[in-house]
Image (cartoon, rainbow, N blue to C red; front, side, top):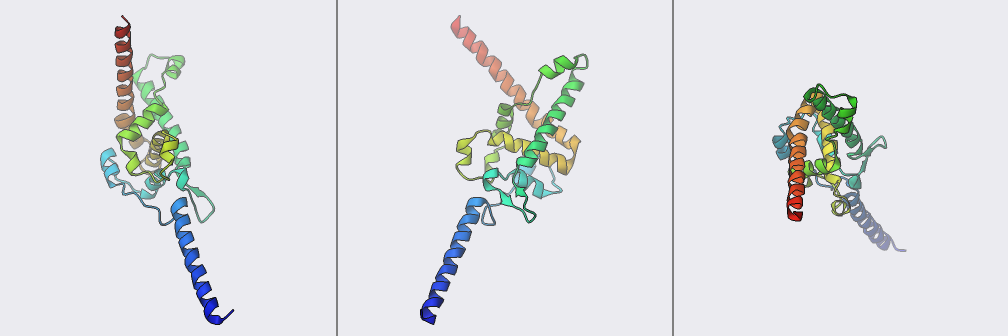
Length: 196
């Protein structure tokens, strides 16, 4: 093979490799993946972040996982796990103070933490504007909203502390729960009146 031909082949292979890497990073969430601007979200929830990286990670769906330098998977699943626990503790604290005469059995029956509530909170916060995911991920699961809310709660907890996390729950989770509960009661009453 002539030197000129080898050089052209090498350049062509290098260009093909660069195009492939760019395409693969886009699919897997690498450096070509968009980074959401969370400023409007911070304004909406009243947060002045200390560690913006936590909130960016909270918005990264597993479909766009990045592998860190230490081999760790960088997506929102670990924050979601933490946020779920912190949300449960926050709701339990709220119920404990709201109902001082209730015993353990009564408190445990009243669970305000639910996937539909978290999903609705995510919709109300317009999290689809900030979530980094492959386009088909939202088609496959509506729970992405709720999972991201839990990851956001985990990020708030790590960045701002437990008291600020309780404020978020009080301001966003509880009102949504009340709205959905009122809507459900109204729907049942409307259904019953139609039967009568």
